[in-house]
Image 1 (cartoon, helix red, strand yellow):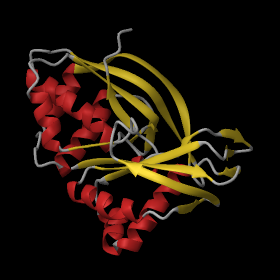
Image 2 (cartoon, one colour; image 1 turned 90 degrees about the vertical axis):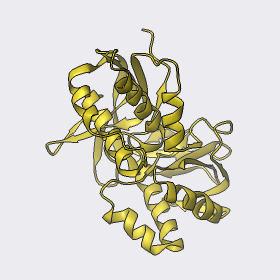
Image 3 (cartoon, one colour; image 1 turned 135 degrees about the horizontal axis):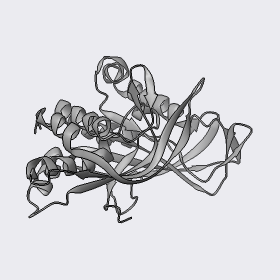
Image 4 (tube, one colour; image 1 turned 30 degrees about the horizontal axis):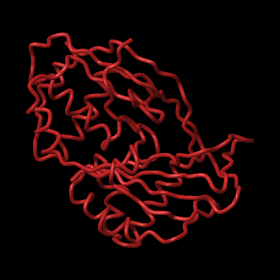
Length: 274
């Protein structure tokens, strides 16, 4: 199972919190895992070469004041944890989510935990599926468009030669997704796709902007917005279908750098028409 678990919150009082809430939520998640399963927490924190989870920023109404976020009582806030490891996904639902207390403290702010969901009908960023379901749903379609679009919802960037690369380069986007897919999926997509991307995939339309992601002691520059990627050799049907699989996978896998601390939240969307 692939899982995207959205947690619903309300803040107790009007309060200021640091803008590095992606990092705060990352620590909160791992602390909860450590309490329930210390061995799993150690594995997630350090030894896994490709992290099997993402953590979103805190979503909801905020105002930015003196390098802090002001939160408001009565407003709805939420965040999500995703998993691309089937075993972790089941544990996330069966153990972690069910052990959430009625109230939690995040960066000095008290929150009521209203509930959680994996149902997309209850929140657009919640959901569950499997590698086999993504694969089968794309393969079974009579035809697929020669273009895919991804919405990069939180600041997204890539590491290249020790520096940030805050642009939706198709090689970086789809190679990042392919590596995660092949590491955790029972349906391996192979490596031939890499050369195909280099020669045949290009950004055909986009609306993106630069945004800053805050961390405790530093900032990262990323981009948000939507980008469509077109395939030059549309006769390569299987490669085009792999593109669509990976675009749908981005909803659970995240894209790029620091996806466990709020960056790179993405999802496939309808192809841009402009």
